[in-house]
Image (cartoon, rainbow, N blue to C red; front, side):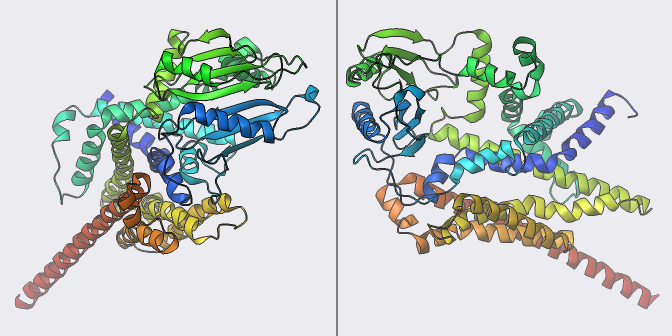
Length: 534
């Protein structure tokens, strides 16, 4: 790296941004979709009713425990999740294994149930929005250790790219108000700068908090220094830091105390709509413990207070505060800001909008890399730009093609029969197989044409999702709007909006290509006319 500090940072910024640019783009697309994970879940399971947030907590808890007494009386643990916000629109019951001393084996299970009937929902199997959200940090097919480190490298490169980008832009706020269309590389740089600066605080927060999210994976020596280096050290650390202290089973039967008074006391302390989990350890045993856990989505701090009760007498035996140390406060706040579980409708849409800006920032950075090097290659004309040609051929499929692939994920959900074996897996396979097909197809086309075709295809794939919904279910846009079912209606309207945006991009690229062709034709005709008259 030659030149001054700023020139050195420009070199680092360029290569750090490109090295894992495609991984970052995938992370931004799927992570942005994850901000509406439960809404996507709802669209991909149209059999589900509207959210059941208004059901009293005491009624849900009573129904959940009654059913668990019948289905898993010997389980070591029952957990009932209350439907208090958009993060969990329906009640959920969970039971965990059985105590070896219990005399019977209860299988573990986890299911949502109808708050009015207590029956589990009969909805199609799907990965839903949760799978899209998980893709942005698990990369789906890769082993967990590999994906952790690849995500970490991509995130660190992103942080380096942001930091060096701030350093090299002396006039960062002036650049924010500068966009010169039709100027080739200059236009792409202006667009990249505007998209970067517009949501700069969000980009810094989401990148840094993403690293903190996986801190234990990237700093194993911290765990090794305390817990040792044996293979089970990490599991021991996780259990000690994150798990509830173990409660020994007595083996003596005893009836479970009524839950209603405990729930009432929790709601007096926290207010209504804050209690999220009713966690019962060793139900039916003399040593049973009931833990009432407040929601961790009441604010940016991703933690909630716990009340521990004796499961037989109902006596309060312990109160665990939401925050026990300054490091925990910092860590949980960064995680809470990253996930945005606390966000209301307006803030959630801002998260989504800034996520789209981040997606566009990475996408324009990938295009800018090729535009800049294409101009350099044309000046050199030494045949040393094979890597550039490869990136130019792959970029349309990697960038625009990913939108088509995500739309294919939704199409697969509706086109596969409800009883199709391994539906969840094949929805994901449909996404990646579609991405592979459009990647190969676009690589075989001239880059300028491939960009237009891929954006047009992606726009059509998204814009037609409401029509697909109309054909395959009774929960179409008209019905959901009439019923005030905004998660379903919002998905269809957002799909239409994204389809329109992608179609506009394709149209603008087509207009630009047409103008360039016309300019070249006029220049050729003018040159021919001059030669004929000379």
